[in-house]
Length: 337
Image 1: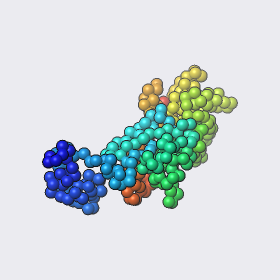
Image 2: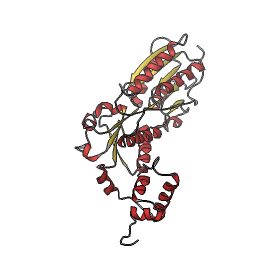
Image 3: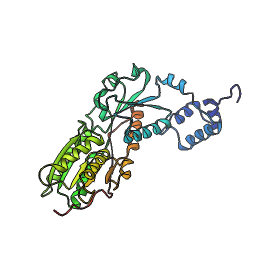
Image 4: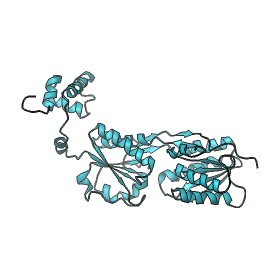
């Protein structure tokens, strides 16, 4: 290559027979509606043959961007949020962006600005609803923000990417009722966020229309130990024992299964147990867990796509992703009284 060992956008333009502006549009992902598909293919082919790599540092200076997004989540140890990160990082990589993963230090408490001055270090924030109250130190400076699993936002608020949580819980309740269960205890996560409020409300609404249904609720922290204690309370409370434990998450369901075994009860012969998330844990349990599969990677990918659109001034309508019940061996018809 004349004068340089590294190909430039001018070299790509010459090889493709187009202008440098066209190369910039195509490789920057902004060609649709401006450049034909054939021309875009020619530019990509030329860039590939020349092994052209854009100068990201120069591009960032020119655009006034760091090409970095911050993903704020409650915990790094939860498989769901690891999958969310995977999806966000995949889309970011396709657009020459990086993703910094940052947990709220107290799980659901304040997330301190990890950079001292986030606005100087990142272009925007993607945040889980479980860290929504923690963003004052990060996003109040005017940074673009996308919220995940936070519910439909108010007009003029940040773009949202949600799961169809209500539909997922509705599927679980109808599954249990269809099997014949009427005495159901909801093991509810003791976390005041939109996603868990919706779950509790949907359980109540669904069972309110079922003749003979008896609903009890036990609240607990999102961990196996507290879930086990809550399930023991539910299964040993005065009166007739519940025939099903409907849990807000697979981790809570694992605690419920431990509680049942500790009391000499069989799952699902004596008590059915359902979860929510479809973590790897769901098929590690014995019996395998009936649960709701959440498209976690899609949540992260859509969140990153929404942030990129927001940065480009493009429309960012609310997104809701479907979820699906996965029936397994932990649920069956209730025992005969």
